[in-house]
Image (tube, rainbow, N blue to C red; front, top):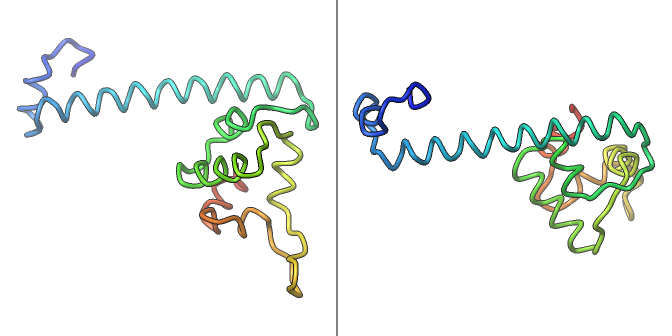
Length: 128
């Protein structure tokens, strides 16, 4: 309705919301659209480069993948903690593969073990 020129107050009244809530919805929509464009651009770059070993800025790679917000934030926290700014797509994929767990008799994905990511965050990355 707003794109068709309907005033914010009229839209708010129709849906029994405040004008500030309509403004928040519009800003969130604009941010989502910008992120979708960024994700598309980054994915295009990754496809064009077609190099699994090329180092990419961690935030760019994580944005291109489109993980859940919590998983993205925890993964970014991990890379900040280990002072790593770039990662290859292969390294990120290897984080999804099972590896021996120190002191235990089984294997598990490093992403599942990572604090704050857990199974839900792992699957948001593994199924992309």
